Length: 181
Image 1: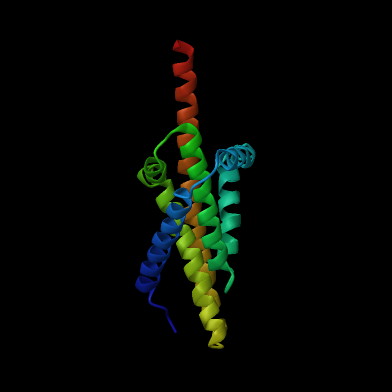
Image 2: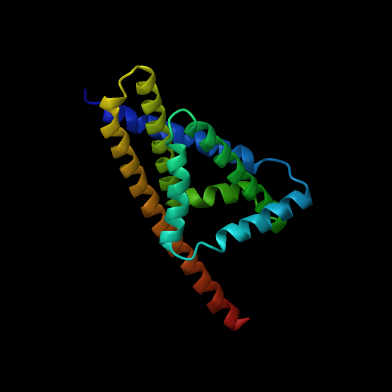
């Protein structure tokens, strides 16, 4: 039986919006200064290892694969979105930057939009697969589950390429400006 691809796309976008709302809730979490500093140090440690688009992709795709696990994936996705939002809260607090601005930047620069739709697809795919498992029709869903993972991986890869290009552009810009200061 052929699934309704349009409905799955709509579900993926709906899940992406829900994950973004959870991300936003995490970003609006009140933190003490010591919590913010600890999160900032943790974020620096995590991001210092991401030196290429491949590193960014592998990090994000690895996380998204866990999100695609039937039954447990959506819970993990919510936790990751919320915790990532807390990093935004820490950055906003320590750098005196608007939380709303920090939440908007990834969407405006498109990479965040693609990432979240990719994550939404992974969660949606895992959720539908879980439903089919319960209905004892998992075999008919395997092909669509794998296709969803491939499609979401493509979105996450494009997002990683864009994100890395933005990082390199800003690093070069800051180096250029730094020469004149």
